[in-house]
Amino acid sequence: MAYYAALVSLLRTLEDSPQPMQHILSDLHHKVGWLLGILEVDSSRKSSLSIKDFEGRIRDASFEAQDIIESHISTDQQELSKSVSSGVCSCFWDIISAVQDMFPAIHLCETWTDSMYQGMNLEVKGLKRVIRELDLILEAMSKINDGKDEAPGAGNLWVAAASRSVASNESAPVGLDQDLLHLKDRLTRSSSNLDIISIVGMGGIGKTTLARNLYNDPLVEDRFDTRAWVVVSQNYHVQEILTILVNSTRQDGYQVHKKSVDELAVRLHKNLKGRRYLIVMDDVWDVKAWDEVKRFFPDDNNSSRVILTTRQSEVAMYANHRSPIHHMGLLSPKSSWDLLRETIFGQEDCPYALQEIGWNIAENCKGLPLAIVVTGGLLSKDSKEEDWKRIAQDVKSAIARNAGDQFMEILSFKL
Image 1 (cartoon, one colour):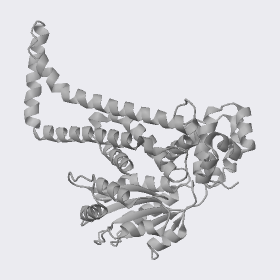
Image 2 (image 1 turned 120 degrees about the vertical axis):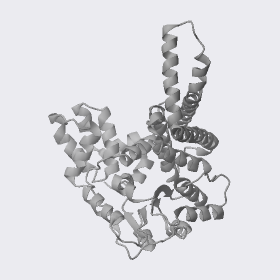
Image 3 (image 1 turned 135 degrees about the vertical axis):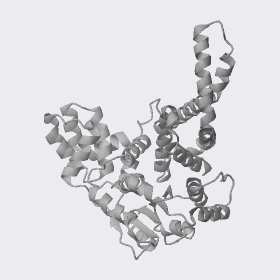
Image 4 (image 1 turned 180 degrees about the horizontal axis):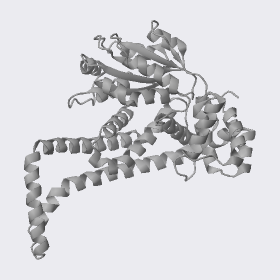
């Protein structure tokens, strides 16, 4: 699935993009996050959504955006190496501008000014075109998914993707403080051997959220020479996994398009050899997926780490039977309420009249963070007390009505 690999590669490029372009890239980052969330959810179960109709468009849009961004980064690096010359040009431009202010009839610099900024304008226009294309893809997917002209977010697939996006971007995850401290120690302590850290738990319990917070922790990020994140899922393809890992860890302009599995495997091993790396393999369903890639992870006794998230304890044991498994527990009633309150109100206080009802709703989510986040999204639209009471009577039915029965399977929601 080259379209998925292209999208993930684009996401990584966006995360590493220079600050001067953030004003346009933030919107693109949001669209890419939406699409990835939808594709990840869709690949984990049988969906009515047909991705094949959009594969080419997603791939082409991703490649176009990445080419524009990488071209911009390359230009920035060239300009940096000419900083002295740039300073002189800047001074010269100030003088010319002053002359033009004094003599408005002089237009000698207009052509030069246009050429000076033409590159940036073309880049912005190109990225806007990509964003528009992704908007059209999202809109088309939404119509297919729910059969109505509604904005993304209305159907079960969209709610699942949104909730996953919210969970994976949680900066201070409620109820995961001790988990983070414990696993951060395993990631950064002095043990030199390659360590496979397995995070195990039922669907919706917060495995990806925990792994994402570890992955993005500044101390963890500084410790490793290179990092990569790949979603494996139930229906995985080795070539896709290797493509994503090679793209994320490459140090040069190596092109992954149309490369065989063997070529990608060799390149991945070369990319990681001698470097302290952190690899996250998210949502691994069976031992075969681990067997397909583990031999390409070199152990150079430099404290490299692999984080593996799975619902299956046997997968975790198989990956590394010598290393302790980190089992995810359900949230306590208090942590459930804290997460629900933050999801709905952010840093603001919950109105007193809704607090008791909110506690009941949080308890009925049975400690599942994903269920709490989704329910919070529903409650944020219904601020009246009677609406909250209605949802509190049957949380499961409320989610099913708005998110679909198939989404309940993703949550493994047991009430």
